[in-house]
Image (tube, rainbow, N blue to C red):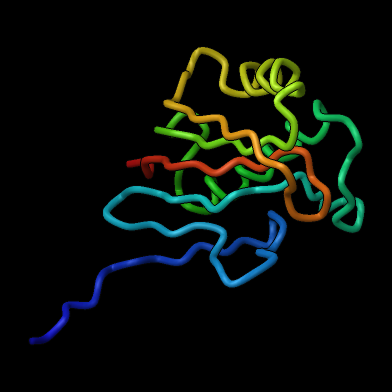
Length: 133
């Protein structure tokens, strides 16, 4: 039996932090963008992590948007996000930043409390989005 090669496009942009392990920043298949979990790593500050949940959430969403743009997508094209948060007590503050970022657009979403995230981060966000055009 011959297996057909899938038309999978790997996305890697230097505008967002590089993966910390064996994965791509995003994969595009059939017009759908699967963005790997993005962390609040500040490219302008030697990949340092801000201290507050508000700053981390904002930076994580900016990194996510950079990968979306490199994938020919946008924040308005996000279908679903999954948010991993190290302490559920941060949720209200993170949600306010998230709400500001997406505005009237409300993608489907899951929030998953977790114990530890890489590099001591408080939040990580992954997304599924449609490509533009």
